[in-house]
Length: 504
Ligand SMILES: [Zn+2]
Image 1 (tube, rainbow, N blue to C red):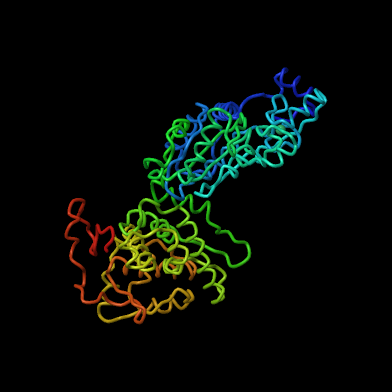
Image 2: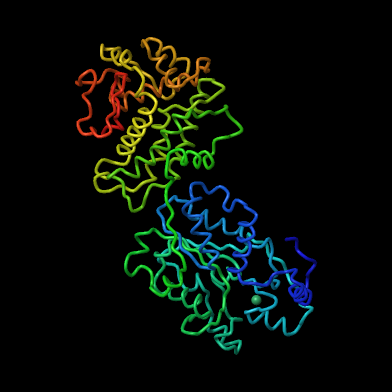
């Protein structure tokens, strides 16, 4: 809606009467704009992937119901992003009293300054227009947040000197919540807020007043409240005061991506991959799949704390590091195109180890060891999809007969190809796994690296720092079938271990 030519309170009143400017609460405003978007078939939260059938419908219902709501979910489930997207449901601009900290409605101001001004200047009082981006306030809750931070503070001495009543807002310094008046106030990790502050929030939401330093202050605010919390914290007894919980109209559960493909779409969207300066970069599908699979493996790993979850930021920052390692290799070896390899994922450990909290058992092993094992499990899982139907015997035998191959994540593509050619069948295997016939050297090298890492991860061959890839130590040539996974065993025409999700 284009802003009508309205610059005084009198003009605004007439524009509202004509229906040119809406006059409504934030909840009504969001609801009306949402209805308009739904009617027009517009996409509601662009960039939010995988929530179309789960979170988005529930959120829409909450907003249509004019509810304050809470998003319950583990870390890295786009909760904050979703709350920020609510801004798109606000009007482009709304009329406000000029210079007012709490964005007073010119037709119904609540602060004393604005009321006095309106009484003096009447219909000639000027108004301002406030853009929607300025109407979103966000706060991470921590135990040390005070009423002064959240609601505001008054200076009793100043008030006494001025001869004002203490409840008079002229002496008040507004906190975050009043500053979000006529907008959206988002609080992350609500359970971390002290009980006393929760009571203050509740009073403002329910009664429009609050006590500050024992003095009652009247603040009938108009705010859409959105919260986030870890589900366990939220449901834990005593973490949230009951009356506040009652005022939160809807509880909406968020979740991690349901499948690898969906997760890859998110990572491709969020990770910084097109970098401008530097060599051209390319991430083969199998590398992207391994990066993504790390998060899936970590989320089901018993050594990792389920309560705090494994954020989607893990694959995103890991992917950035993977591409950087490929870039570094290309720069050092003078290649024009940086093609990521599976071994680059191990080089991305620094972007992975900080992204999960360990259980006791994991702590004993150390984050790096656990992360390496998770990467290997991820590689095995992905390699299974690419290699399980291929004939790997020739290559396995080459290593079993004592052959070894020393490669490294900094080795140029040309060197990888040179070394790989010694191993009969290895290059063919990379091609069979999907590397096109006329692929440039860096891509073929990445395919070879994937085959070797895949065979290592599925324990067909071994790898050590000193000897590189070599035959599987002290193991039968081809490991016996998995003893337990009998249920979904389907006979395969090809040799080689089949049906193994991953070992370890
Ligand atoms: Zn005001």
